[in-house]
Length: 259
Image 1 (cartoon, one colour):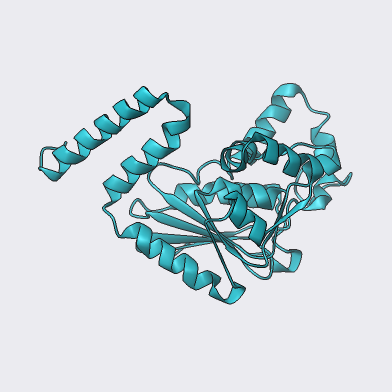
Image 2 (tube, helix red, strand yellow):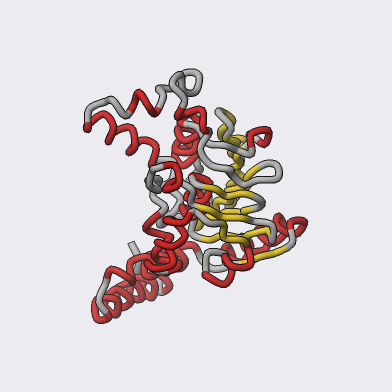
């Protein structure tokens, strides 16, 4: 079932699994504000029964990053140039960036598990979009890079938090400050990739992972995800208490005593 098809974003749902495709392969799925609005909308149109969301890019690249026309004086057709946006008030500029971030912030919703299927380039905003997902399955030709600093910018699309959590502060700083490429083999070693496979096996690997994630009861997966997502912000004793509360809810549910 097709849920959305606009501005380079195609969304379909098939039972428990939804697939979000970046569908502008001629430009290596370069991102625009219109695409970001469509990606934010994708999160709103998902049926309640969806448990796994797969994010993929059509063509040879996952996403080569922001469409550079955004920095030209005339900008992208129908969009305000970033150079003109920079002349806005603090409030307007903050509101615009907040809207852009909306495309990157729903992928870790507690009721879903999201998987980025990454092949080819995942540069800048493409890297941050892959980081927005819970899990990353990569083809062995995948190449990540955070090129914002080389342009005089910072990564501002919600990618810095998951990057530090995955690879640690020192490695995240080195990757972002140098803008160097992180290829699939290193991404696997650093923990950026959950799995690396040949390009021809990427679709099957994502399908197998989706099936494995769907094997357990939904409520148990939701509770487990919440426990793990909050673990780094809790003390050891707070985490133990959170585990007890979650397990009590699960036991009561299994005993037919839930709400």
